[in-house]
Image (tube, rainbow, N blue to C red; front, side, top):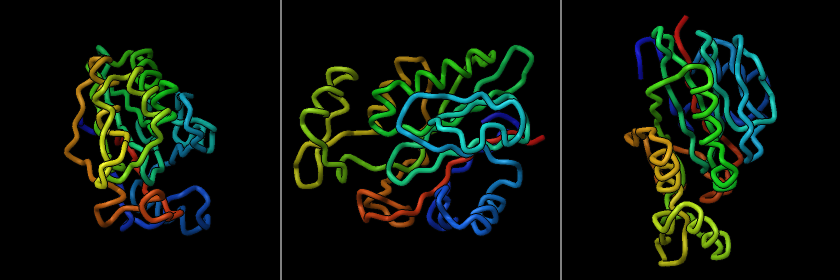
Length: 221
């Protein structure tokens, strides 16, 4: 990430960052990660992107991605198995534009990553790059054959994986990788872990946990 841009993929060690958590405790846990106002979203597995024009703008909006060119505005995604993707681009004057997207399979099918990259570029962001955080691996992501076949026709056969038991699975990471490659956006996967199989993350599919970790990106003022 560029100078002054901070990206943080949280874990269960940060405590529950779900938006339904007790408000006072949630505010404290958010501040411990990033002290600036958060734009947190009521995620609905869609492709709506909000453009944040001041710190805290659109907090609580029904959307699955946010972008901003404003320093001190924290963009946050909550997840427990879906893929959190953090973005950065820059304009011709050297101003950074950052973004955060919540990419489950429905959001990928709806086009959330394409919409996020388009929003960054509409703000003048060139050279967009992305980072993928902890999400479920195909080994733990059993998937219905009808939905899997439809996604494979849409995105390519590389999205088809297998569970540890040999059943059909969605490779969510490969799906993110394919979409961003088609958009010309390089993807850093060094932060990737399996939320269901690796210790230290909340997982709904793996353990029916209601907690959520947060992935946050911001620019220092």
